[in-house]
Amino acid sequence: MAPPSERPDALTLDEKWDRTIDLLLRRSVYGGLAGATAALLLFRKATSRAAVAAFGMGTGFGSAYTDASRQFSGTVPELPSAMDPSR
Image (cartoon, rainbow, N blue to C red; front, side, top):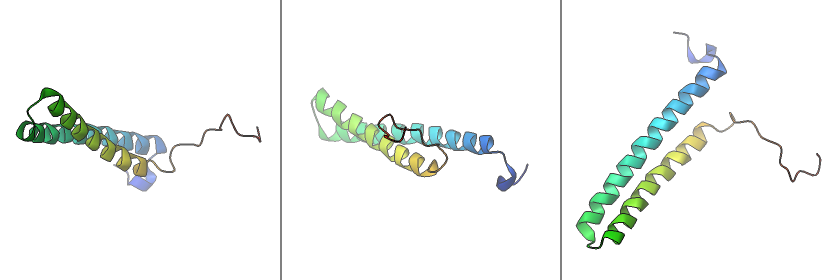
């Protein structure tokens, strides 16, 4: 296997997507489980429990999104804006 510096950009981008999807799934599930556990211990009503579990899942998703945006910085091309006056 070639060192990372000799790999084509497409393979590097594929590895980043694989890591991102894995991280997104793991953190969302772990956040949802932590939220559901806290909800079962702290709240009685079903709506409160669902809200806390959803908050936990959203926190995990947001954390994964932040890490993915750092990982992909500079690899996604800038698209021209429709509001760009120089067009």
